Image 1 (cartoon, helix red, strand yellow):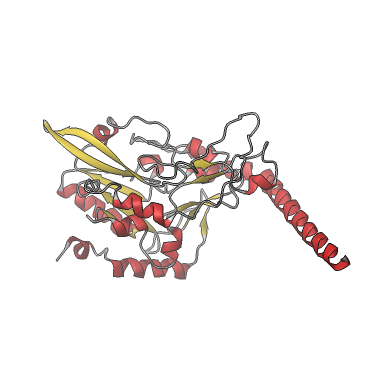
Image 2 (cartoon, one colour; image 1 turned 45 degrees about the vertical axis):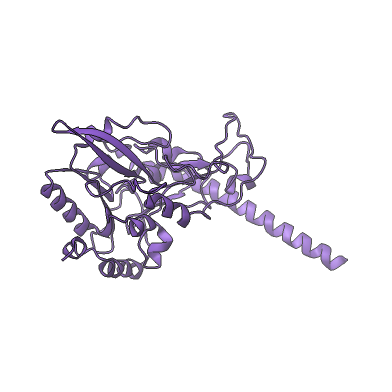
Length: 336
């Protein structure tokens, strides 16, 4: 009996859980509201004892497949890209789409190589890095246009049609996961030099694939089955079981108030973190505490009350203007 069958997290059980998610609907989680625990809520497990970084490949399998799955996520870039005031800086990755050794708007996962010592012996540990899909994400709390949502299946998703690229989500993320691409998004149609600077992008747990009953691309592609997805309770139990078997450690269970992604490692995470120099697109693995914990109940309501009106007004004005233009064009044709 293989490990997949022992854990009960095979493709059949995943599809059954995914079907439950679809049947339950796609209700949104608002910060401060508790999601009832159930089989529909998913979690992922990344076993660092199994991940070998796909050293025999030019690009790790999870990274290559993620790039392919999301290759059409970003629309054509508006040229020239408007320069925002007063920052006067844009972020354009459209000519660097093949970068795979850090997070970018075109690369939602990368694999960090950690050289550590275990009981006096050198060891290489490979650590896939992507969004951890926090249980109570500060990024969703702080977004002034409500472009960031926590879904009941556990995924934290940025809506590119609502995002202005202000990067507040990145500033409150302990790992600074979201990455910005300028020259795309709704801001181009409103005040491109004053309000916004593009769209923020990150892993959305392959939302479309989940809806279709498929596994996320990175999980399906992993040749070592180092990544698993399944019902949250079962994944958490599996993480505990594996950590105990290897006298190992778990990351993601308590970090930032808890996440839907658990790492299991035979090496302490502080040792792995010591090999990670936090820099743009390359997060560390500190034992992060919950950010903005006190704002969860009231913060979003206070922030959004006026801004919902502003956003609705702007969107309404934009829609009205678009309709007027359409009618105008139709009238011109009628008069010809």
